[in-house]
Image (cartoon, rainbow, N blue to C red):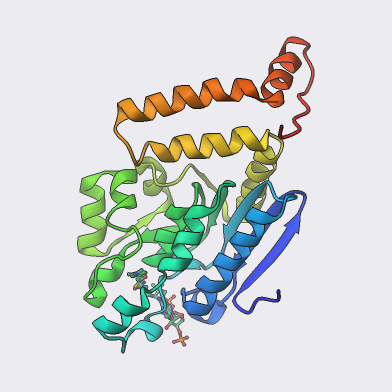
Length: 258
Ligand code: DAK
């Protein structure tokens, strides 16, 4: 399917999705969110794809939900239309890892989209923010919830109440992003991380994703139990036998996703 607001490239087991509404700094509208959800569903279903990278432009990952699209909507419109819920549900259903490669603005829904990914690699120019308060609204897809879990109450309150932006260095310090690299190296770094993940056993990769995400859903005791059972269950795979045999035999493991 040809997309209007995103580009999709699948190569070397990696699906690279580039948000592409340059005139609006990749603001998220119905079309873009629909296309993103469709591309992610396709990547999930495509057996060749082992890792997904979502990026924007050098100037903006995404400057938020499209304000022009939202400005005249009523409560009934947004409530009945359930703005972005099917699309965000689709993002959360993806079992393969998703890396956000963020340069420039990641604001409002853009910051929230990055946080829906499994981890964020940022360039030195990245700026994160939840400026919805300046528009008389509150964040709507995780800016008060995921951000609070990632950076703690104090910074989440600061960001959501003042609408200020956090630069890449602060975002790394606060635990919002996993790495910060020079802008010219961003895609190499993100694609390199994706390639590294693509070498692993897909079964194990998906279990890691489930287990880490579990930490956000359940009490520690339940999370630890889930992790332990996940560990036990992987002994039923050929990839566990291969991984451990390869270590003992001092060779590279050849995983077969079995
Ligand atoms: N929406 C629409 N257009 C946008 C936009 C946005 N969010 N951000 C930028 N643009 C457009 C600008 O209008 C401008 O268009 P033209 O005037 O050239 O036609 C073009 O992109 C370039 O922007 P600027 O001229 O403003 O560029 P600057 O470098 O001067 O400033 C900026 C860059 C990022 C600081 C500034 O554009 C800005 O403040 N943008 C708005 C940022 C913002 O407030 N973001 C939060 C939006 S609210 C929900 C789901 C999601 C959400 C809520 C609920 N539910 C499921 C319930 C999310 C809400 C939001 O994200």
